[in-house]
Image 1 (spheres, rainbow, N blue to C red):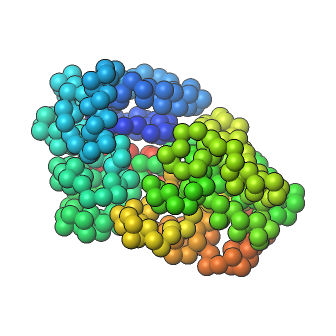
Image 2: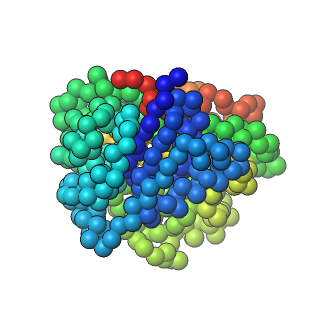
Image 3: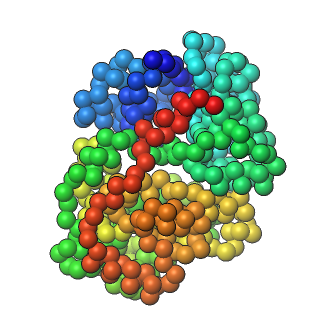
Length: 403
């Protein structure tokens, strides 16, 4: 039996319970997670889920957690690096010298915006062992650090093949020899199975009306916001759904003017739409194994992934436009395991259209009349549970696969 020891660096994003699939593999001897102190609370999801499924011993035996307490100077350096896409003193922030155990490889995750690109070249020069990089959300601009990350990684794990086309266009790099494909957002296999087995009646069963949800961390109402390309601007799609007679349920942690807003302004159009009775502003959902909120999510027939891309985005931020054409929104996987059919407008997200057609799960609509017809057809369709679902167990097998 091969015994694999992994050093995991970089920023961590929920759900951390997915790492249980990795820890449960027989080949894994040890995974050392290194994260900043303020990320420690994110691992509560892993421990809570391990307790729910009786996997606490696996965590104790195989996982080591190292939380770096950043002093003021390190915080300033970290912020500087993230703001200006530099790798200044990165190895000092994470104290690479403290992690010189006998590891098989270093695994660095996960996105362009979190500063983890800066770790790859430094780690490659320091550790002298293979560097594996899982990567999902791009920088939205040409970046030396992103290019260095691509060059110095010994193995790249990307959500799908179309990422290679973007990197080829940006940096004229042929990465096919070291690229593998799996999505780091795939959920923990046992959570998927547990959610699938929850017996919940759809709200449409009671009123014969499609109920469409919007699951998001933040909903904005300023259509000129360019930070995320209007991905979380839902006013127009809510109006469209109301026009065709659907009920809309918005689950958001924050409803604000734009992505730079820090406070909630009560004078916003979402509240006006709620007065129609066709939009219900629901509490945010905390989705984890054992949570009643999964039963709430399973009540809905369909779910919005993100709003249609506006044509001007192609001119104002071409790289963000390209990314949104290939992106798989995190919420897609929550919809998938909860049997909530994802909705995508035709020509708004190229890869999602392709994925929906490939899986046979989801609705791609051309206009409002087409959406209306397909939503009502959905009510008459058998409530078969969609089962062709990838989990983090699949990701883990790609991660430890020899290059």
